[in-house]
Length: 215
Ligand code: 13P
Image (cartoon, rainbow, N blue to C red; front, top):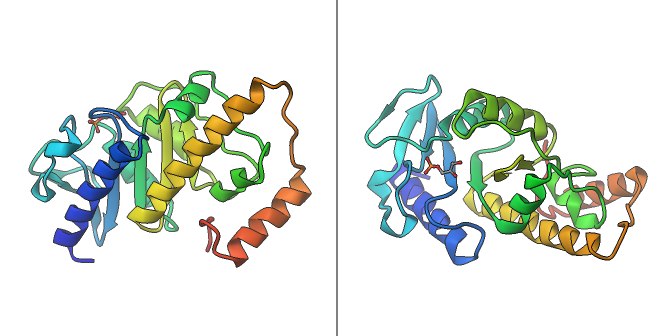
């Protein structure tokens, strides 16, 4: 995709986050890999006013041109550098994912769809101040072998091979978080064992069901 098309697609995806109800206000941010760096949403600009030319081009060394990039550019840059299987990083403050993250809860295999992120759980990172290298470092750990994680006392990060896949992943994480929150109100959840989750994840890979690392 040409850079101009990609800029427009990032803006559409950012606006779609609000439309589907997984983000509020100027929270959240999106980046997409380009040849020698990334395109990323600017900091603190409402999505309904964001134009393709507001999207910031950054290099992997952290330099940029134009508007100030998202305050979270470090984790976007570091994840894209660390994860050749992802071309898009999407961050949002979806309510149920953020609720579980406020209690530092990993999501275990209470439902088979947890496997959509590529493993038998969706981890929650430690807390670190927004916009810091420390937050990037803890996010990378929580995302190991996964396409999504919760961010402690903050929100979620979803990865994708493209913008649509990352948005779909973020919606799945939010739906799964809501289900888990509700199941917990009914008592101890039933957990699917690791052998069955391995079968589920293998089946998802074979059927291209969502996406998983190394696809
Ligand atoms: P930015 O507007 O700087 O992208 O920050 C929003 C956010 O969600 C910080 O975590």
